[in-house]
Length: 367
Image 1: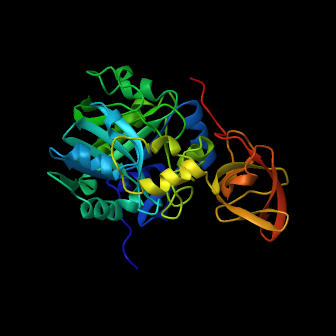
Image 2: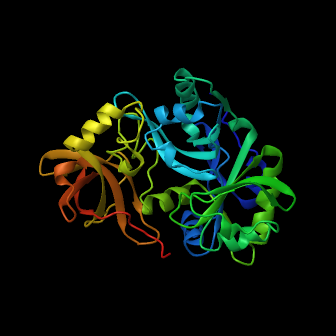
């Protein structure tokens, strides 16, 4: 059995009573206190996540823009300096290589932030399709990242950033070399919880100090460390996809509901464009939809969904929503059955239980 990978914050976990699990080959905290408590903290105050397992790949060179236009489904020409763009990479058949963020420093310098389980695969995919004067480097092993998420995130992080007004970092923007109590970091504002918040990228050597400083600065506000459990329930309520569940090599970005990140009319051909264009023009046979249980039962990943004797799809994510106190799920369903209010059945432990197709996102914060 191969050794699980650990982030530079691993030794700090035990200070907070973390319960860790194997997450895609990483030894990561699923919870520190309880998933519900951590979820509630992010919705009402703020929570701090170790996301150092995420991957970072630098793209540099005079032809970087043209190269990324070919590799990404979204339109890189819309990205301004110090802006961030959500996008996907597709295979020729339209299936998804990964969903990711592109950070732009300049026309010849970008940072890609990719899913932890896909780092090696993504780097190989990018390497195999290199064109022109472009260099790529996988800097994941020397880059650490934490995320502070929640309505009080700005107030807390501002205590560390005496020289930077964090209010000037807009949504899907970033600033480099932000001084956080004497340590330099890239700070962005994207979020994966449905709440406001910041991501902090720095060298491995600085992340423990930054983690401790944020928790100390946020003590009065009730900031607590949070694990993967709350990260999943938070992103799920906000209808943010998770690779390997709502989106995968077998599920296209359009089927996953992230069509806003697929620009088939952009002034460049990208890998997978023909299939995705055909899906846009001819319609989808299946797509991700929300479901809400009528009968008592929690829909879980992989549970089949039926209408009568016809299997119409399966659950991709499901749980009892800590915010809504309802049993809800996302499911990849035959499109003709995805009208809001349609009654379906989810098979849970051999029993067919009633549910309805429900609107998403399940949760949206008040601006």
